[in-house]
Length: 436
Image 1 (cartoon, rainbow, N blue to C red):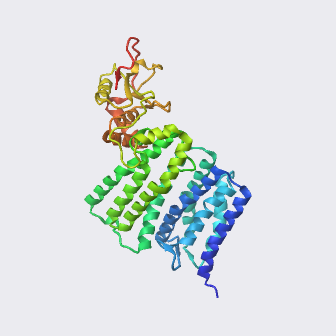
Image 2: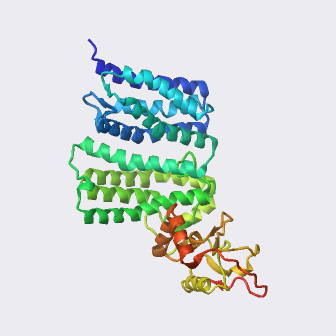
Image 3: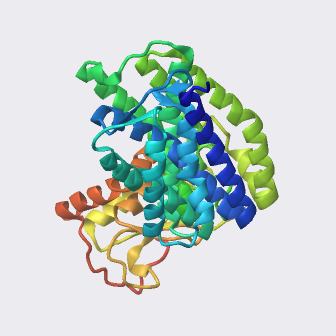
């Protein structure tokens, strides 16, 4: 007699694979639609695993299974679930209103969840868990798929990609490393408060590198870190003026530090393997792709900026126009800021009197990049200018430009006297006023 547990687990993968293949043959998706569908499933893998951990803790459902488990969840059910909530609806229902997709998934789960017995043991309030899963797992995954397929909401899809990457690299991968090796680890929340505080602050430094790199891809490149959804232009500003692989550097350092904090060597081994992969196959493929898309511009950049070892001072093209920082000469506090920057002779940046700006309508300190992309004002402009000095000040600038941080610091600055003010033009004032 066939074990019903094995039957349910095998059937879950069979159903997911069959539906995926059928939908693929039916839709024949293009490159962007395929990338979006894949990203939806990658989002779902750590998200579904977290959902199942919460479900067991709260009592929504639990699993009666042996072998092939990851944090108590059958791996086959995890993969099938991620695929059925990710790739299948993304390809089969790309134009259906999202509310209708959620309703369809709910209807399917009302049948599939009870049918997954005896592997899935439902609690009396399992529908609450279902609602939480649809809202926190399925909906963001489908938004990521649709925005990628339609090339919409660049900042939104980059944020979801980043969260998916964090879930895969810093939750799923460590879980696999620990459970696969059956090794011990220390829950960081049980550490003394002073140790936990130091650990968080130490992790923040490499984390800022990764976050600002994603932000730079969106702001200056018009794309995302995903190879299927890359920037339209070569990004050589911000953190990329210091190091060519900031995201990989960030991930490897974070994994090494995480391994040390939880005292598990296998997580550190995962970091070493990630470095080998990034420096080897992935690096070669990336080089070929970027050389094909950007030609001599990429070659020139790579000669000057190393992959893994940051420069102390930022690189910039000497044959290109300089970025400009417009600072009001008629404002005492503002002119002092401008003089502070000029004294440090930041590469690739010229300090200009705001009174000479062509629009004659500036109300804050303003940074205009040399590549014609969006200008920045206020704290964001100061942060951009700091990135031109050296790596130490650049780290401050990267942090200041992060979402929420930038808005909060701007509010504090405005409350301290740096609020917007009208700048009168001065016709006889020369421009630029200070060249560096």
